[in-house]
Length: 199
Ligand code: SF4
Ligand code: SF4
Image 1 (cartoon, helix red, strand yellow):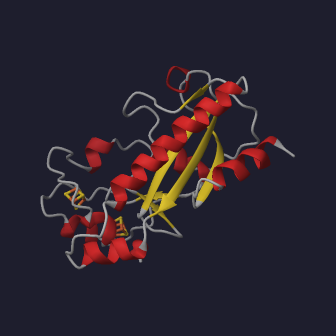
Image 2 (spheres, rainbow, N blue to C red; image 1 turned 120 degrees about the vertical axis):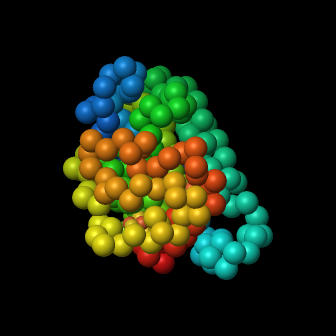
């Protein structure tokens, strides 16, 4: 079996909804630390969770933070397994260095919306991503970043209770600080759940 297939099978058994082997060789070497591949994976948040947030109800469980922990644990486990097979692999990069979203763009998974979130065709913004970077010789993909598809929509900007979002349309040179004032963001998730792409 090919290397990709072997690991795809292993990772899917962990309950992820999708995974991609992505070329990251275009990012600076001091960030990728010699790794040319990212295994990017993720899980969609449930419709029940989104529905509850839209109705201003407390969801039954803290699905977002639980899923974030699961993706982070999976990344750590994968890094250890790949290391055990002789491939340098890293699950935790310094904060802000090679964000999941940057890799997701190269995977062709979606675009960056005015809410500064990844917006996917299948799940909207309601996805939690994880990744491990590695020197393992996977066959990878590399897509040009998708243009934002927000158009005239401004829902996330209007629904934000703290005016944290600038409303800027993302381009390849846009920094996160130009999109969102993180000091104002209270992580209410309204910009995620009300995005029309989230369904
Ligand atoms: S999470 Fe809430 S506060 Fe933060 S940008 Fe989105 S809507 Fe605004
Ligand atoms: S709510 Fe509208 S403007 Fe905001 S990210 Fe979604 S499509 Fe773009």
